[in-house]
Amino acid sequence: MEQTEAKEIYQMGVEALNDCDYRMAGAYFKNAAKMNYKPAIAALEKLILEGKYKNVQSKQTLSSNTESKELFEKGVDYYNGRNNTKIDYVKAFECFLSSSIDGYAFAMNWLGYCYEYGKGTKKNLDSAFGWYEKAANANVANAIYHLGRLYYDGKGVQQDYNKAFGLFKKACDLRESLAYEYLADCYCYGQGTKINYEKALQFYLKVEPRGVIEYQIGCIYARGLSTGSDYPKAAEHFQKGVDFGHAPSMNSLGVLYYNGEGVQKDYNKAFELFKKASDLGYTTAHGWLADCYFYGQGTKINYEKALQFYLKVKPRGVIEYKIGYIYARCLSTGSDYPKAAEHFQKGVDFGNTKSMIDLGILYYEGKGIQQDYYKAFELFKKASDLENKTAYAWLAECYYYGNGTKKDYQKALQLYLKGNLYGYTQRQIGRIYESGQDVKKNLTEALNWYKKANESGKDCKADIERINNLLNKKPENKSIDKTKVETKANSNKPIKAYEGDKPYIFVSYSHTDSKVVKEVLQMLINQGYRIWFDEGIRAGSSWTENLMNHIKNASHFIFFLSRHSINSKYCLKELRFADRRNKIIIPICIENVNVSDEIDFLLGEVQMLFKNNLEKEEFMEKFNSSNHIEICSR
Image 1 (cartoon, rainbow, N blue to C red):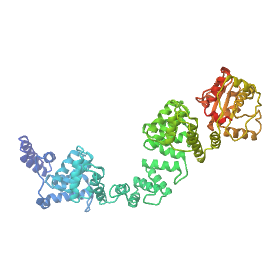
Image 2 (tube, one colour):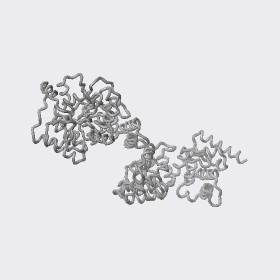
Image 3 (tube, rainbow, N blue to C red):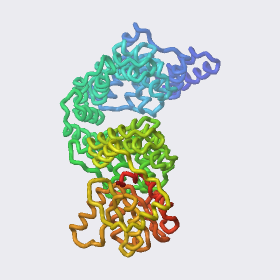
Image 4 (cartoon, rainbow, N blue to C red):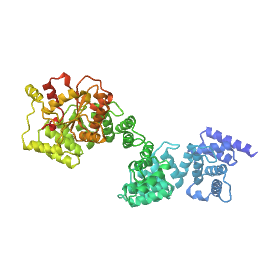
């Protein structure tokens, strides 16, 4: 009977609604709703949310309407299971709805919460927003906070940081503690207001402590974002975050221990914290943990584990460089130059200068990729333009030897001087001043640089002695003419291997070719060159050691190419050893041969001298123009 009457009242409300008489329609719907007629409840809720029926009670009525308040309190009992009431979200929702329809603002806030999270009803963000807004308009602080949160997250409404900030500020002014964190975030990240770390810190310190809050406070202290950096306070708050099991706090406290900021430097503690954060899946910690394994800080060096964790980190320049570094230097499971090149290229794409240099070196040496001096030069140039000192030295090498660009000793000199000065580069500078190519010859300056190189650990005693001799006496005239060559070649001066401390040339050849080789050696000795060659004695370990020592101490290395020498394991060993020791290699071809890829690689782009295709004087002229060969003459 009551439902029939409710239906009739509801129909009267529908008619009033059709006539756009919202006040009357609302009154009819409200009466039917009190009879628990569901269509009337829905219609009245719609009218209220659309703002066509105003039902919010005044501040005076808010606390005096006993029936609405009791309904609200009953709803809270059902929602939280308090006062010996079982939790029942459906009944809680019905109580909040009835109390809200009656205009009780606190109930509207809870009703909005039920709609937002689907408690006792279907999730409906539009309805949640509407009821929060009604309660916020009645100055309910918690509703103001919730409404700000919806604007902040763009949940059920267009995201709007400005509106969110205004609502959070208003809620904080009303001492709604839940809004403190959001207002702090707005100040910290400049959302809806200007960045203000001092105010951010002020509100973070008001929030109930938990991991993320302690982390935020620690970050502000650590980065000096408020009143200057305060690492001890940062460490204190990060430790609180660690106690809450917060992974970013673990990582940040680990960084402080790693760098000794605000705490005593302790790699072991840093490693433990990085590992703990990494085990929790915090990706930033993977990179720090990898560094510990890479450098052996807080743990033993373990390149395999370092690689494992570097590969988990979000790609960026320095990470790709370190991965490439491990692959290139056989530090994990053996060298893998193609993978190294791949990761160095990724590092280059990120603008990492170290990656540019190491990828350039792979191109320069043809490791893992096709040898390409031009690409190497471009990469060295790119890193050099970014003022990397190591790149200056490699770019100088390109100009010095004409690899990937034209030879230019002047540019090489400028770059050597700009880069990191160590034994090798100091010696190169000395050589440029000594040769006087593209720059003014200056033996005094050359001597100074050779001395510096020697002090840096590069053995330049022979260079120093040579320059001192040149400064004290006029050097011999090395011009070549046919008569002189013929005369000296026929002088039958005995061939004897040089033994002494001055720069000399080591000779590698097959003894099957002794006759032809000794004719060439006779010419060189007649011209005043110091030559060392084995005289056929190869047996015995002591002789092998003697042979290696003579290669190490030589400044130049002649490799006689013939079908016998290129198939001789001894000759190939000597050539490999000379290449590893960075000797200046002079290839002399005494018959037409097809060399292997390895020999071709070891000889590089050095100009080959074809003994059979040249007249004696032309051969000697080309030989005399070999790189710094003059240092091996008397």
